[in-house]
Image (cartoon, rainbow, N blue to C red):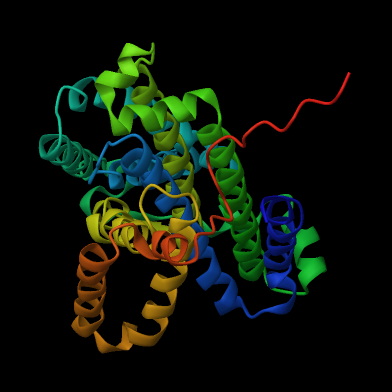
Length: 339
């Protein structure tokens, strides 16, 4: 099952999703763009909480910093949006270094509260940046995205407007980011460093006794996930086109929903966020019109999963079937060939 998934199913799925802008409506492209971005955020939070044991409720800090860095690069420094997206990732990674020095001194609930405090400080600080609209925010200049060099080629390919071409480009970037994140996460978690990280999560003292440095590994994951989260935040607000402190640093949109996705899908499993984001998308589609009922249902489902399927839906599937299509451990070596 392992080889077909990696060599056939996954590339075919990515290719099929890449063709959506050619066949689907603009609304579908926008919906799937948001799903892919939430998947990237969920994969990053799962690496932190599920594999490194760092339960953060402040990941919106890196989403917001990445978005604001992109806006600053485009509006103040006159760069292109693609360069601004990369700048967003670098800014988030740069912020994560001093943040790590602070929050790594905390454990458990104190770590979670510490990350949330950092996010609030960032939100309040950027609300004072008058060049980017202060507390009310600002909009991305339309020509900044619609005059990108690649826009004419995309318009000719899809026979669409400039705005539709921008949606397609951001969608393809989100798809590439999600696919890369999935492949890189699996490769990392199957490497010696990834296995060491899981050992640290399960028993830090035992991991240290066999030569694993818990602080070094956790710091590496913290910085790398901040970098990818910053890129995702910049990409999100490139597509949205408008930014404000409350939107960019939204605890509900960029952390609470992400935690829900990971918990219901299966925390500490690689396919868990994929399953979770699909369930979340379907619930949103069917229940979003019901207002607060939608949030209540999400909460009840989350509670039910934590009570009756603590390993999430993916963990429940493995438990019931005994099959793990995407194992993270190393395969046992086969017999040596005869001399």
